[in-house]
Length: 362
Image (cartoon, rainbow, N blue to C red; front, side, top):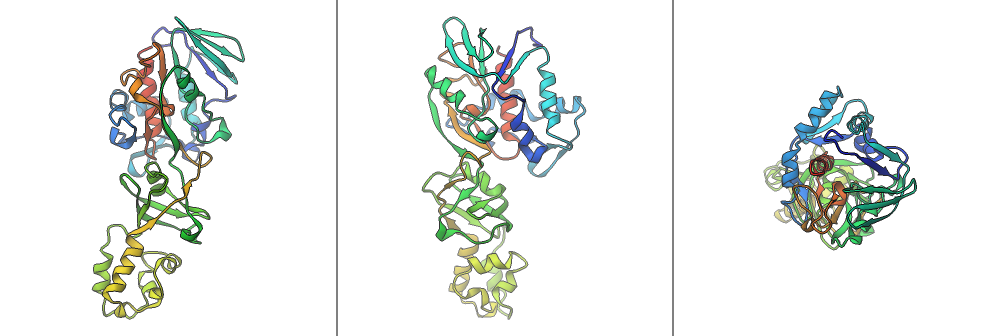
């Protein structure tokens, strides 16, 4: 609109921004100060570089501050609204002023010759350009669908295999610990970076920020590696505590919950005095607490995932404009594209940055 374009927004949802409204516990983690290409997964890890460089976290923060929205910075550069995620929805709607917004409108088909003919439940829309900002598959209860993926396939685009990401992990019965609600700081690694944040035990497996992060890199059949005492030389500490007569579980209870220690320590070691530990005992204890290997069955699925991994293949999109190399005037932005951010505002920043890139090309 600000560039003199006529814009129509079509959305099958009856109210705007439902995923924004439920994010961040209702306070919307709207960006992350440290959003860089290294914080994103993609078959082409360089694809997101251009868009992220041209619309940065500071650029979005400037919009937030210009509207007078109160915000705060939490751990790891995460920026949240102080009051409500509704403030971000209101900001975005204000930026759409001048556009025709059609809520509760189903797209029933799209055809393309010289222009796009979009059949909808409220009538046909004809456009020179079409931007697909349909999101991913998580949280179908608020309206998530595979519309964007289906349309990409219709126009000949490849799809990088999709999967739930930033999701809890489910464990086989033999590996579950009956410790629901217990949370500890841990380092968790799948086939990617190591994440050091809280790990939460659930009825069916494990969750918490460290697990959600690692889940984006986890693949079926892979092991998950957990260090319950990150940054500590546990073997050295135990070897140097030969005069300690306390039982091992009591000695370590200041570091980890006693129930967790009793569940993880092999055999009768939890009750053994520290002074009586052999080198073999110490090696076994260290392996159990700092080199714990788990074998998840699955993620928590689309109902529990925060984002979608995979999506429209970036090999057939311009990194400058998000435009299709197959169909001139067709753009894909946000989560529907094969760019998946870490937990902590990175996915919203990709939505803003990729949208800005497409918007400036239209």
